[in-house]
Structure formats: structure tokens, C-alpha cells
Length: 236
Ligand SMILES: Cc1cc2nc3c(=O)[nH]c(=O)nc-3n(C[C@H](O)[C@H](O)[C@H](O)COP(=O)(O)OP(=O)(O)OC[C@H]3O[C@@H](n4cnc5c(N)ncnc54)[C@H](O)[C@@H]3O)c2cc1C
Image 1 (cartoon, protein in one colour):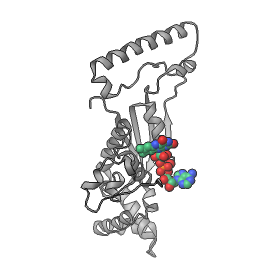
Image 2 (image 1 turned 90 degrees about the vertical axis):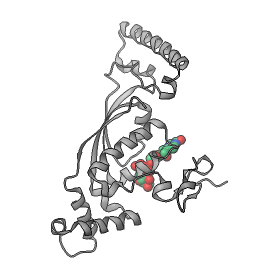
Image 3 (image 1 turned 45 degrees about the vertical axis):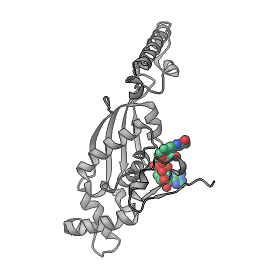
Image 4 (image 1 turned 180 degrees about the horizontal axis):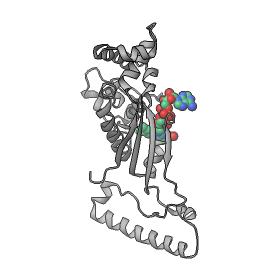
């Protein structure tokens, strides 16, 4: 796809591996957290992480947090992203933003000449509507009632590692919409660079749990996974 969202990892927990594994070991050791942080060998760190990541006892990885700058995504994806409540968000205000016609066009439409021409016509009409209302003295905050959901926005989000794993389970699934799936993949790519020990376990539930929960809406990918299972949360 041509126009991807931009994702930059602004910051993340310093010494995250040492911090998280000290937290895991704190539960079983008489040593202090700072003693553990200094003393754990890489082998021991790996073993501890494997235990919590495979057993799902994930509260200890909440000590690692990651702050992302996200730009060039639609308000549609923003709405889906903020459903993930275990996170902190700062989002560009629509009250003072005058770019009411700067929206994302889905690749399927953009790559179809006839459809792209229809959208272009819609955009021109929208631009002239906004211009006319602005010339009558109305404020940008009122223009946003006519702004399409596809308008571009910029977001800063902070999530801890546990919340991110949950986010990836939901949003890397092919049932998630293409734009947030693309965003989730880009976020995973940047955290894999700094914390591969944690995020190598990230993925949709067919990969992380060997279970697809999508019932008859499943994409069928679970069939190719050894021991994979299809389940549904709906009672039929
Ligand atoms: C393919 C897809 C389709 C979707 N369709 C819809 C839809 O049609 N309509 C819709 O409304 N949403 C929809 N969603 C959003 C979905 O229901 C979740 O709201 C979203 O994925 C956030 O997940 P979460 O609650 O686990 O995340 P978070 O809010 O980050 O929560 C993380 C975890 O914390 C716990 N938690 C958080 N808050 C509470 C609480 N108040 N009480 C108890 N436990 C809590 C839960 O264990 C939760 O899993 C869809 C999501 C996907 C991936």
C-alpha cells in the first residue's frame, strides 16, 4: 500500500528488560528490586520472561511502557484506537484545525479510477461548502460537523507492554479494519526493535493462543496453525 501511517517510537522505559525481569523475580526473591535489576543474567532474564509470557501472568510487564507518535491516520482509526482504555492519549484538536477536506482515501477506492473520480468530485463540493461557510464567518469548530470521518489526525499514545499485547491481539487480526491493522503492524515493528524478547509473542489470538475466536466470521488462518482451534464467543 502506498500511503502508510507514520509511527515513531518517541520514548520507552529505560532498562526495560532489566526492570521487567526484576519485577518478575521480585515475587519470588528476598532481594530488593535494585539488587535484582543489577544481578540477573541474560539467561535468567529470558527464563523469567518466558514463564510470564507463556503463562499469561502479565502484570509484571506493565512496568515497561512505550510512547508513540502516530500521524496520517483517519479519525476512524483514532476512534478504534481509543477503545483501548489502558493507555494515555493526546490528539490533535479538531476545533482549530482548518484542514476539513484532507481525508484518507481507502486504497481500494484510490486504485479504482472511476471510484477515485467520484471521491474527487465529493472533495471539491466539500471544499466549496467549507469555503462558503467560512466566508460567512463561521468558525473551524463548527465546520467539523461537516468533516468526513476519514480526515487525517495526529496522535501521541502511551501504552504499557501488557496493553500493547492485548492491542496487537485485537488489531493484527484480519477481522480488524485495514487501516488500524496497518497501524498495529507499524507499532509492532518499532517495539520489536527495542523489546524483541517481549513482542515476539505478539500477534492475533490464532497465533498467541492457537484459538480463533471469530466463529463463522473467521478468515480460516487457524487451520494452518498446528493445534489451531476455531471457537466462537457467541452461543448459537
Ligand atoms: C474486529 C473488531 C471489531 C470490533 N467491533 C466493535 C463493535 O462493533 N462495537 C464496539 O463497540 N466495539 C468493537 N470493537 C472494539 C472491542 O470491543 C474493544 O472495545 C477494543 O478492541 C478494546 O479492547 P479491550 O477492551 O480489551 O482493551 P482495553 O480497553 O485496553 O482493556 C484491556 C483489558 O482490560 C480489562 N478492562 C478494561 N476496562 C475494563 C472495565 N471497565 N471492566 C472490566 N475489565 C476492563 C479487560 O480485560 C480488557 O480486555 C471491535 C474490535 C475489533 C478488533
